[in-house]
Length: 205
Length: 191
Image 1 (tube, rainbow over the protein chains, first blue to last red):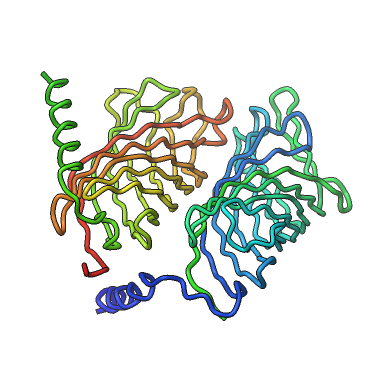
Image 2: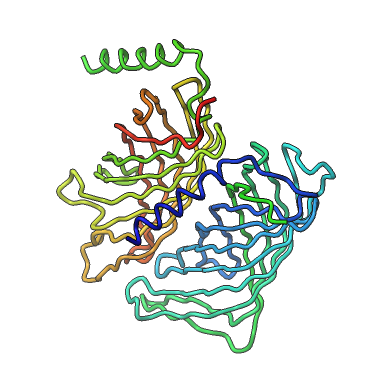
């Protein structure tokens, strides 16, 4: 019975989705859904290797030139050959478009925002040996949409993210891996490169 | 012989795609779904894997589709397989170049895999299944030969890493090839 209800519900939504996006007064209120891939460079030590990740996002536009992006990313990376790290980012960015034209083929923007991170370092040989932390961060960067159609865009973004939280140092000496949490709150950073695919679902207001 | 059949199939596809002048089939905003067997070729290992896959795809515009895929590892053709377990979920968008009943496409789909490799170093360390990010670049061709069925050929380049083995990460990049019968339902009626 529940399956039938779900099928009927999904089927009833399809004609709505199949219509053209009806623009109201301005571009404010446009809601998009997207998926993204990420590449991360971390600057904590030579043992840090580049990270690779995947995630999702939605966008909610506030005006013709201001948009916002709400994202969740999951990235993993090697700690030399003795450990690995997993970063989960959840946050938001505000994007400001640099062109007056609201629908150019190439639409560059600058962005700034805030996010929370859950970070976990794990020993390759002993998963019970790990260190973890939560932190808050700010990020800023540049990006551009490539508007393939009026509703679909591919976007490329480069951003610099600074985390404020306990720093974790990984070390391996004589095949013994240790993770040390530094006292107090430190600053540590990454550069993140994203490619995302986004589709405008609706104009909400 | 195989080469001749392959060329004949290609010529048939080409003739079908140029023979008609009807509007592009994807203008009907179809919802597509299929189940297929995939032959995987690992790029960093001499290993060929077999997957079963399924996908669901919707065309909000004739040139754009949104698609979710899932892959389930069945087995390897080698005696010492690299993988013990692998399940992949992808979600992304594809750009299409439809012409009548023919449709060439390419796209990008990020996702996650739940992966457990066999122990590559033959040492006394137990590996565990882990959630890992995946990126897939896909390309393919669809021939909509009837109102409800289509023939497809697809190739995916799947990029992934298993982190946390004794010697560091294990590269699991794989090219997957599949083809067969797919199904679709048009959500927009022809005028």
